[in-house]
Image (cartoon, rainbow, N blue to C red):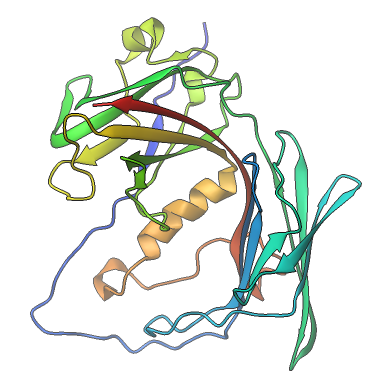
Length: 292
């Protein structure tokens, strides 16, 4: 019998603290790096890559976008070309397209600046996702004897894949409004591990540990309050391992509170690593909705 491991949950919750007096810690700023953020998803759409420069930690300025870059992605023997949109530094595929599971995508970004020719690259593989989410329930958050007051749990029901090393990102929207917006701070990550290959929240899983909520909606948060008749949608993204850890590190490095530890650059899969930050990832999505 396969050994069962607990599901690993990385809760993307930022701690908030306050001080009576404003305080700023002097820090030595490092060199400005190139920031590259992009993805290939299985959604049929214009895929995008953003190219910019990093900014000092305490600045309120937006990162400077880099125009005029040559951007393309290799998919086996095929080349996917990108062109700069009307928004500086934002590069889109020439036509809408959808990525495919088990394909490896290789990103290339080239441009010239005062230091000459700059070349950056990355690689990512899209993993298999579940075939479908059969249904979801929204009810009081409870797992075994643990209950969270003021929280509603989102419980999905689906047949898991056989791969125990697949990471999933969960995002939730209420009445078609993503409660996390454009940020990654209101998503949750889990890995099925020993539960791979069985029906998630099915009879066997209930017997082994109970139904498991993959997302908690804080009913004290105005963005997460659910009323009777609201439509709650859960998106289940199959994501690469490095992207899962990247999201976790973003949570611990966000904000300007010096009591949270010295800010540092999160991991990157953009090369050369000493000149760039950011993440290029391939992800696939499954969605399911319920009326509360």
